[in-house]
Image 1: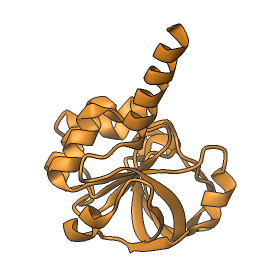
Image 2: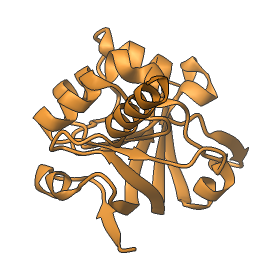
Image 3: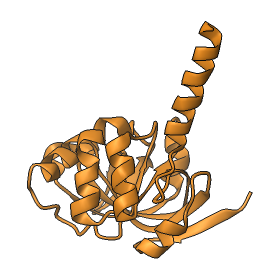
Length: 190
C-alpha cells in the first residue's frame, strides 16, 4: 500500500487529487476542534487562528503542563457526526482543506467537501497513544475557557496516519457502506 505524504497547509489542487481509500500521513500544523468550537464559530465568532488551508482534528486531547510547555499524552479522534450541523459552514467560510475524525460525516459535509475542495480523513478510534506519539509539539492553545478537551490546540504533527473516506469529488466511503448495508438487508428480507 502506498502512503501519500501531506504537509500543511494544504492547497486545493493537492486535496482534489486525493481519492476515497488513499492512505495519508500528515505533517505540519493542525488544530483540534470539537463541539463547542464548531458551535462558537458557526454562530459567528471568528476563530482565533486562520483555518484557511488547514486541517481541523475532531479530538479532545489529554494535555499535561510541563513547566511552560504542554505535553500531549493522548490524541485519539472523537466522533465526527456531532459536528455535522456545523462542519459545512466552516469548510465554506473558513477554507478548511481537511477534517480528521472517526465515524464519518453526513451529506452536508460531503457536499461542502466537493464544492470547496476539502477531504474527511478517518483516524482509528482507540489509538489515542499512537496518535499522541505523532504530536511532535504543542505550539499553543486558544479558547481554553471552553475546557481543555474543547479548546483549540495547536499541534505540530509528524506522519499522523489517516484514511481518506470523503473526497473532494463527492466520493464517500461512508455512503458506499450504508448503501451496501441497505442492499444486503433488502436481500435478507427478501
